[in-house]
Length: 301
Length: 278
Image (cartoon, rainbow over all chains, first blue to last red; front, side, top):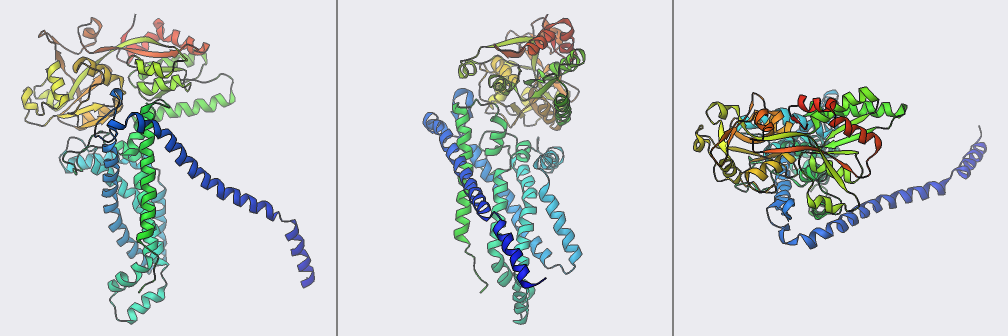
């Protein structure tokens, strides 16, 4: 075929391609996605209005009794944060060290096997984790700490840690692996020990990727409902003493999961539940913005 | 809990599959886990007899009412009365509770505590435990062990009946609670896993691991939790098991309600461990 013939074909193909159609569709999709986010936030704001006006005197207390019109959300907010901190402080160090180990694996087959196992782990539905939590983990925890029930904050934190680990591990391994091999070789050429190379060169270079992996994990930890709901014990009260992980508790998500079906649409009760989800969303957004400002993508020094 | 849930959802799924290809419209009943066993047994027989497909879902009394009020289910199951607040939220409809059986809510303890000698408590003792004023079994003749207090979710009919008689108000707070659970199945499991727990269960759920306590009344009379004492009215913590319908009830739903109240339907109430209404 001659060049001229090729040109004619490609030109006619270009003419027939509905390029404007695709462009419009892409734009509509992009705007549509942003609109959904705005719509969700607007709905949450509107629906939580009544709570702020009619339940304002009890809202920031630690007592919850909808039948008497007492809606203290402090235990739930505290519970969400507490469980998240436990899960993150277990999953981050383990995940990071494991990611470094996997990225150093020389055996490609073994590395692929580990990675795909992790990806499968990340895809297991949360109810499965919840079932395992109720049937086994809560009983082990109860046995280990000699408790009457293992449905406590610590169990929820443990389950969550396992749930967020694969996401965090897999993404931070990608970040570490994508640091050019030359960096590592330069480190070796400078006479650094491998751990020095890792700490001073590889990790700083992979930091933006690792921190976004941590954020994704954080988002899942805050938003996870089913598994937490089954193992946390549903106690609408602050733990005594406050930082006692062996007490039952309640997170925002487990509260919503348990009670959204019990509250009539439009009631104060419903509105307070919406307010709690607004707090959850705001928290996630705030963390995202904060992390962006703390970790600026930098090059290894 | 999960086995039953699974079985129900499989039934629901297969019913959905059936209804997609054959004519009769599926009817749904949902709400209290206390009322559920009797209704789901009756529903099975009713479907076999008439071909009318019925899905029975658990969800608790509060959720049963809400779903009925919002038109998501044909019949609600409630193990308590409808509150004024609930009625007020849906002024456009009238709701009729229909008692299909009677039940007792029994204070229960772990078998270890029962075997160690705590076989009866007075109503005021139980109230003290739930208020958090008593926290050791030694105070009631049991072993020197902290009392593990299991409470139920506030919308639970079991809890409201129990709190009404024991604490004097169906909405009472229980500051002594250590764990809050949702359904009767969950409660049964939690009780079995613990060796120093107290909780509340519908009489149909008692077994060897979960022992019902005799209740000492204010006049000193001691009443054991037996079906006979529920029937003759001596046991103090009793309630009606209700199904609730809206004024615009459909004809098939009405015929199922009639079936539940018939002699044939009442058999299932008894089979589930409750007292029949007639």
